[in-house]
Image 1 (cartoon, chains in turn red, blue):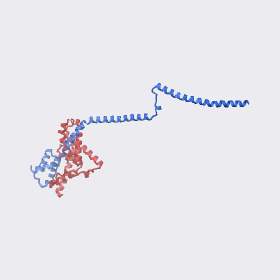
Image 2 (image 1 turned 60 degrees about the horizontal axis):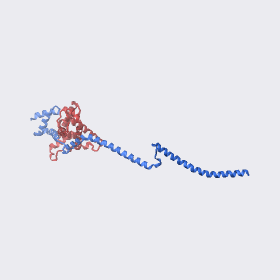
Image 3 (image 1 turned 90 degrees about the horizontal axis):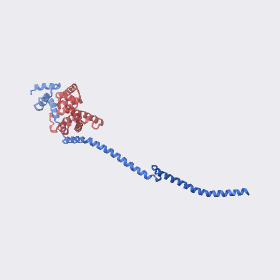
Length: 170
Length: 166
């Protein structure tokens, strides 16, 4: 792969990678760093890329691994404890959009952020990015069954919380 | 799309039986149409997915930064090799210069007599001869001096002989 192919084919995936990394890290700067590192890894490993069938899934997998590494180092350094570092308010689009639907969307964001890691990854890849089950298996290095179980649990956990809001008007 | 179909699709969705196209239909439905009250929160979920997909890495310099890093890493193997070689060369140069200076300094401080002539046998022989001559010259002077003392000795002996004869 030459530099033009890299620029035209791989680099445009940056937003997908960024959103995925953000899902792990909850911090835009950290996510951006991770994405940059992913591209450098991809470039350095470009010889392998010809053997990779789905290069986008491959990039996503690298993003996942680097994000997890980053979480580990952050936890070790304890400069930004992730619990407090995860600022859900960052997801707010703009102040003037704070309508009722916007508020419930923020709540949805909190629900998803509260999910266990695997469930969070699966629901993000499926419902935000629209990946097929096979691709999710490849990205997360899980088998089909685990992916489906995690997606089922994630969707139903969110649904339950949404129904609670409907019932009690929280 | 009528609400019965949506209801059915939602049921499939919660059971994870929907295809990607059906999920797209759901997202579209909740995006545009007026949503009945009971689905308000569900709509929030699908709008959240759709909204989240628009989220992008808003950094204009990002692409160029990645490209420059990538392009420099292309050369970096050569550059790294060059730098490492230069590093070693510099280290060796410093070491050699230091040794040379120290050797000079040591030579200066050592007295000239101590400088050996071992590598030239002729010169060594001459030097030894010179040293021996110097010693023998010393011996010579000493001998003449002792001879003078001997004179007193002989005189004393003479006097003693005369004393016993008398």
